[in-house]
Amino acid sequence: MTQPDFDAVVVGAGFAGLYLLHQLRSRGFSVRVYEAGSDIGGTWFWNRYPGARCDVESLEYSYQFSDALQQEWDWSEKYATQGEILSYVNHVAERFDLRRDIQLNTHVEQAIFNEDDDYWQVSTKDGDTVTARFCIMATGCLSSTNVPDIKGLEIFKGATFHTGNWPHVEPDFEGKTVGIIGTGSSAIQSIPLVAEAARHLHVFQRTPSYAIPAYNGPYDPAYVKDRKENYATYRERAKNSRSGFLLSINEENATDCNAEEQQRVYDERWRRGGLTFLGAFNDLLTDKQANDTAADYVRAKISDVVDDPEKARLLSPDTVIGCKRVCVDTNYYQTYNRDNVTLHDVKTDPIEEITERGIRYGNREIELDEIIFATGFDAMTGALLKMDIRGRGGISLREKWREGPKNYLGLAIAGFPNMFIVTGPGSPSVLANMMPAIEHHVEWIADCIDHLRTMKQRCIEAQPDAEENWVRQTNEIADRTLFPTCNSWYLGANIPGKPRVFMPYLGFQRYLEECEQVVADGYAGFTLA
Image (cartoon, rainbow, N blue to C red; front, side, top):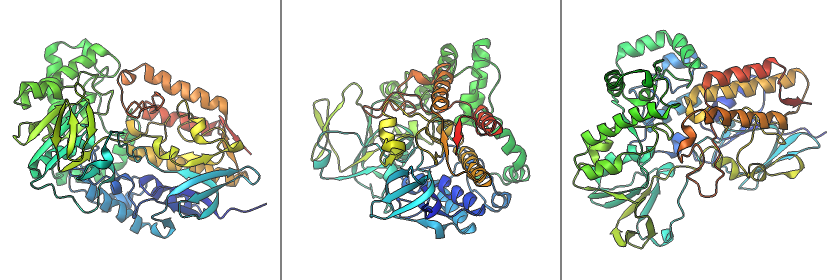
């Protein structure tokens, strides 16, 4: 029987890949991590556009597996910049000596399961091949950039950029006429800063987003001291929440309150800022009437800030608030009061083509020096489906997921033994705090592999009926909410031809309980051999 080169191959060296390496190596397993980038950091390596920040508070968007690490690292701001998060990633890698098992600048092209000996054969773009008992995909939920197929893109004479693959040498927009396509999270963060530098900024918006003020700033030392002294308590509270972070949810329903009480609560949440706004009432994401009160409140705030009533109207979404990811902003709406910013409605007049000199839409050409694509990602499945992954009988993952992603617990796929996904579709992932979601998955996977070793078993595979039941449960939970009511990337609706399936599992605490029960029942829903 052929012995594989490694116990595990991990694809991706972001937060998930680094923690996998630390966990598995500390348990005595041999690990090789492959990373496509020239350095570690995952999404925080690639997304370095102007204004890039996390929308979860820094003290929560951090590892909790090491109390010494929690105590020694000091975050400077409530919402850390991309650069500060990347510094944290590098600190973690150095502190736990992780780099020696990471191979950078390496694109994994293919992973094939060998049924005779129960291992994975992993091949890279450079032609190298290694074998491993386990193949773990830590490729990230938002790592496969989406560049829209617009006629003429290749003939544009100026520079083009994508916020999800930003150059390491910062572009100079000073004195230039810049166009930005998209008004999602990355655009909302970058538009105010690009507008400050550019001679003129043209914003091409198809669908407006809801944005809540960040009120970012330096941390109060007393606040940090309290968090660090009571980290265990705060982390436990977050774990037992719906979202995995300290987003306090008002247990009252908006529909049970009069207009004055609703106004008071929304005012309080608005002053606090950030994603906590969606916790203003318990029924905001389950009752359309309740949701309308929150949406109307934000639309009124937009009208208060934006001087031009027509611009305010265009910037005001008409969708359910929260069915697309709510953005956290700094001076986003205020930017549209600048004389050097023009808003173009490409929902009414779609972009016709990109020309040598700019963008043509509405029977006119907007001349541009440079174009920024803030057009998001092929979320949750894109990075996985770019690789040629083949399980039992040579079936490809692309074929398996032709009608949408199917897996068990968001962790394992029937027909693909000994392969795990970190924060994949079917898990809370992007609708939770990604850091505890990552840590939970990594620890679950490491415990599982450890269990197999203890039991002298070398193969684990999700059962098809368990997979079908999990997909059904995930969608049944989502269908009890307002999430599926709009065309979001949670459903894959931003990618032409992608199956419309709601991908995240709603409820972090409930998800943890489900995973714990599976283990308690002897890995119910899995076949161990």
